[in-house]
Length: 128
Image 1 (cartoon, helix red, strand yellow):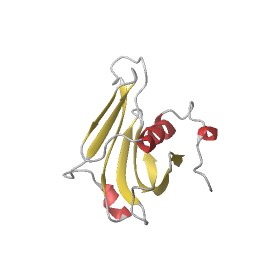
Image 2 (tube, helix red, strand yellow):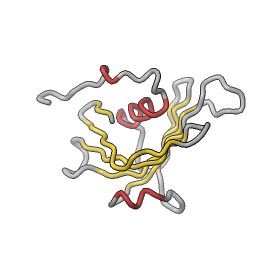
Image 3 (tube, one colour):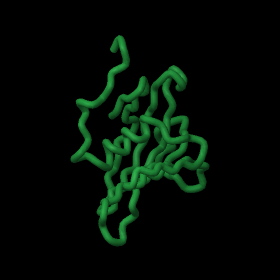
């Protein structure tokens, strides 16, 4: 799905697109220097907003939690989670154990800014 700054994000469970609010639900596996060799697995939701639209939030929202197997991605209720808000004015707010990272930003762009997302900008780590 994305690769940036030595971290690769792969789709572990297909995202199910939502309706008008751009809600995506799925699971991703993250590989990188600070991850276990098998990667880290996360249930992940993305709620994409529309800039300068009345009654819509002025940010895109990624949230999720670590899971051990893909089947656990079905429900976010009751799970301790992390959340990252990407405000359209450039501010980034993160809460929970996973802090905003380059891969979370790039994944948000892939899901929420599809028209602006350009895979040719992906930086490959040396030797790949």
